[in-house]
Image (cartoon, helix red, strand yellow):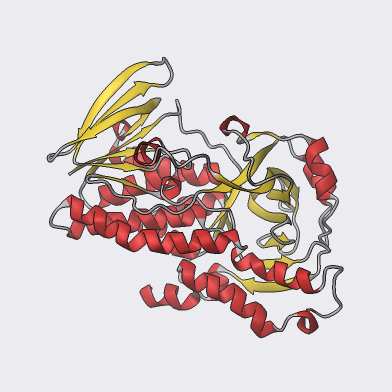
Length: 414
């Protein structure tokens, strides 16, 4: 079976590896001229790392990432609201990784090229249109580097993994409008910086209206430093007036972010100095889209951010794309007809990811910080007197269960 995958991001590349491992012939078409290691940090949760480990990628990930040991939630004053061990340290069968998004993509890209051959990854190819019939799908790609006709491809299926601005999603839902903005602007960067805590842990300080995120994503220039990812999220605008597409991922300015960064205090980290020392950082709106009524149209379906873009809350965006890939690949092996597999994939993954989109809109597991800050906006002496351990645990653990990475779920399949 031949499969066209539109989009060479984490989801599309992982699907290519999954399909190849099951005997299919996928080809990835990516509109960028090359797949470069760009972006900043993300966390990849154990339920997704388990899938990458089964593809034999764990040694390559260990070479470029940090095995996350602990997650600490704080209020904006740096007082601890909740803390928990993560990954192997929490008893999971595989690690959680804090990693540079581009390096994660690079590890998967290198495996695709090595296992499928360089012709399986076609860069500089922008999807122009496609037609399907009873026998398959024909897709037309332009050469995005030269602005001229590129090539025509024929396959049994077309899987759109082309992100929040998906061309294929827009084809089937032309009236969907722009992505849904919650009014939060994000500034994201990374810098080689002295380690904090144990050098393997992450901090999230503040709720949805104003949040600081800190975690190491790779070894530093010295044993005493780490490449440290930082994010400042602040609700700054009117959700009814989202930024235009060209305003996404633009270079950030110190004069914009520093006044907001001053709101936060984290023990052992000079936040202002960290941001000022960063060689470059980026400005993004926090956007998602409303869940769709369907992903699958005959021999075409959606995957990853094309299907279910979600707020970057709870470390689930890339992880859910990887889970999409595993589910779809397994169903294609078992189905009598590929269209049956696509319909079954949608039936499993659409409701599951729609629930995560909804949970992330109200803060996901980080909602525990909002809950404490609402009761103690000026800080506290004892968090237990503000909100009991049982109530805090219920917020955090319920999200893990619904998103599929609770300890019980991980160990059950292991």
